[in-house]
Amino acid sequence: MSLSLEQVLALAPDASAAAAGKKLGTPAPWQNLGGNNDAYWGECKGSALYQVRVARADLAAKCTCPSRKLPCKHTLGLLVLAATAPKALSATEPPEWVIEWLVKRGEGAARRAARQDREATAEPADPATQERRAAKRSDRVLQGLDALDLWLNDLMRNGLASVETHGPSFWTQQAARMVDAQAPGIAARLRRIADLPRTEGWTERLLAELGRLALLTHAFRRLDQFDPLLREDLRQLIGWTVEQDDILRTGEAVSDRWAVIGQSLEEEERLKVQRNWLVGAATGRHALVLQFAVGAAPFATMLLPGTIFDGDLVFYPSALPLRALIRERRGNPLALDRLPAAASIDALLGGWSGALARLPWLDRYPAVLQSVVPIPDGGASWRLRDAAGAQLPLARGDHWLLLALSGGHPIDLAGEWDGASILPLGVVADGAYHVVASAA
Image (cartoon, rainbow, N blue to C red):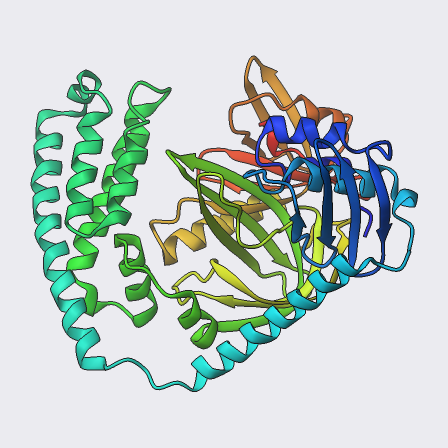
């Protein structure tokens, strides 16, 4: 697969790393450059001579520099070279330090596969002990929900107009109480609500969010009345965590050629949350791969928007199974030249309505649209129009790159729909994928 410069720079942990990596993306500071079907490698001259190697299958990398930013500027520089001057990485025999690294990676993958096999046949934890722990936590959560309902009732009785007089601490203090009640999922919702007051149209959105919050607290009290999959959703929405090993062992596995159609990033204090949206080329199935990292730590898996790979995903149990884990990737990724399962705006809204009927607390939904044209309304207001004339608003921002890529002509677009607007993440124009998330 031929990398593009924008794909490489999208991997950078911040703007300064991207600029430094771009600066190193010339042959001048490098020696012993090379590449084959398995990896790229080279030695970069700086204050020392740093050995850099990148696996082509998943873009995992190792550099001998002391940087805490991952990928570091040397890794980015090597990938910039691969994107802009691939002949500089001509096929050669890899040096010993590259071979050793590739062998260790293969051994690590074999150990992980063996561990998963052992866990699949291991005896489950004592059900009685698990049930007692779950009951104890449920009691604590219910006490917290009782206090939250009283607080919500007081808020509605006083009227939403009073909210404007309160600062963010009005919400974050209540969020802290929910953390104490072992309901971190509700705490996260309260922290997000804190950003709504005094924004445009905030009263309607605030009322809708408070309604969904109340629906969640009441639904959790009737947990036993729902089917098992919705019960799993409610527990996770409250804040129960599920071990990834358990999901990999018991979840629904789907094999396909998975297109990475878009990637978005959010940061809250020191926690980074990366959302990767995937679509199965054969099944048309959507998937969300969530990754978390603290501080400067890297994400566990490198996923590159605009690529397609053959592999297996395992889906979390849910009434609306979107979230998934990658169990296996096979071979090297290929360039994405079209968006699978692209549809009209009416089809997107129909899918969104059906998804909400199954899971009313859904915050985001994959938007894969066919033949849409971006239209500026003036200022920061933009719209998308499809071939049938249907229109949807874009998230507020500067979308001139999107317009430049379209040239006023229809393009296929991938993004996130939140019920109010679309955040564009990537487009396919003239048979090539382009990252546009940074333009929003």
